[in-house]
Image (tube, rainbow, N blue to C red; front, side):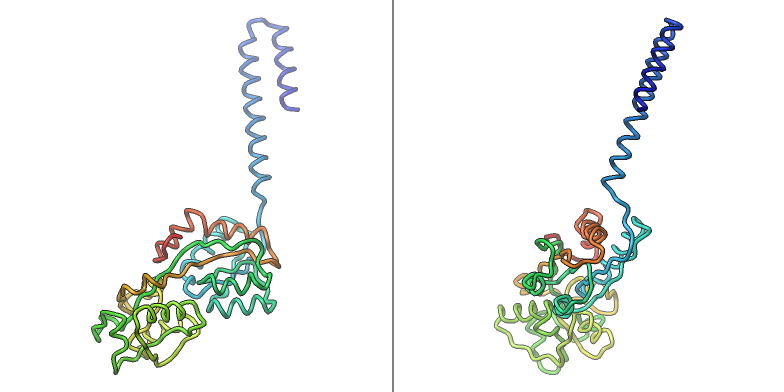
Length: 275
């Protein structure tokens, strides 16, 4: 409609004054550009629907710091949304989802716990691996017990904490121990990696086998010790939209943020590795 009006305007002006042709052409060009711009804007708007409502994300405990940051970013990008998180051990979250807990997104610390959800038909589509994580030993600040290897944790007198074997960090720790032919009896098994780390932060344990990301997040509350066996027990982290997601559009957008260059910068900055 706008193009038609501009074309008619040009004809009238040309009929009145031949010398006005150049001006008419400029007017037509301006109108055409305006129409094209308006059309492009409308197209961009229609391809990016406005998101609103609550997005509920169930995520492995080790994702707490980075996902909290990404949640804040998402809410700034989409002011009418609110991102709420449930951070816990991946096995606990998977059991909640298959038990009917309402959620939009599930981010697990291992393919095995994700399989609990996909096998139950609770995932929409195929989960995608978005980061990887590696184990590290967390000791008391300054490493007063001079822990330098995984084998050192088997020594008598050290109070060591592990994640439960059903939790991804616990399964990875056991895999590393098995690969080294070592046996370790911890003073306790914890239900998620944050709980294991807290034991060291509170000086209730001398060391814990956790993720590099958790050691980094703890700052000077612990000292991290690398060990080569951790390379044999690296965990892939998959993420998926859930089949009964109450807010599908916003959930998809959050997953895209996690996988985007911006999301990957936040995650690698927290110590995660790219897939």
